[in-house]
Image (cartoon, rainbow, N blue to C red; front, side, top):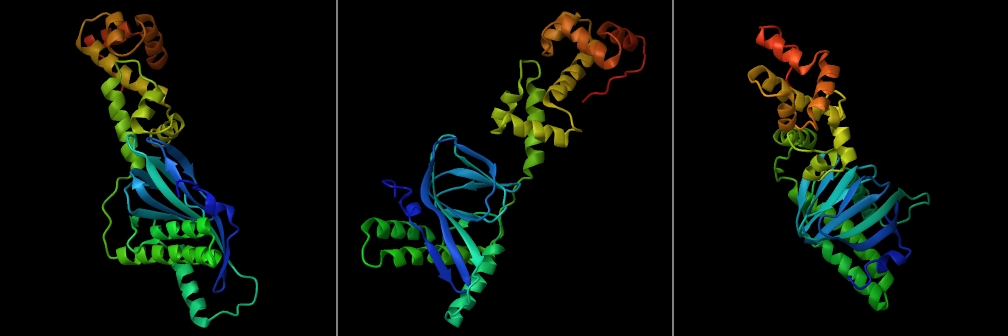
Length: 306
């Protein structure tokens, strides 16, 4: 399929299956270069994602899963998902997008076929959101459909349509087979990423540090990280949180030593003593020297550490 990865997409494939009309919207092979990401998005249709080669990860709604060769996962209408190839390894993905609608025409099909189609479509709408192994060879049906398209032999069109149905059936069977397997535990990714970001900032507050630096460490966009901070840190921004961390260390030094304000500024990530003086006074209503004096005299500590 590498020669013409979108060859099947050029066909107008419409399939009647029992009481349903299935329209193939996309049917292709795509390649993710190492580190390539596709930001959170969703579709109005079903999308079958198969991984024939490479590694990566997918986030389905708010849970992250590693991807490896031989796996596939399904995203249905409205399911939010994020995709990413491994930083050092490309990832191939076979994709089938289909729109499924109840037929408006009178159904005059085989009763068994109608019943099977009905049962499978209902299962499709309720499949769990996690990857499973392609246990029944659905992936091979992409290649068979492509070969039928390329060769254009007698019966190619019906062969391609049959392979589309087989992809659906074999995908559902894979989830049926995996139904009794307990899934490995996964992290609650929002809290996990937030905790990692705060830990990184606390470990590196003394150096120049930007939102982009922290986002890159977490493999997030700066916008995603800023949104995460606002959601989990009382609506505060990255700049305010980093300033809080630095000021907590400034207060600690003021209480426990005699270093100059310039020296303390240099050790806590502030550009200069004058800048630290201005930030400190704006935040706490007193200068660093007044804060030091009040603590040396046994006064109250008005500053709460982060």
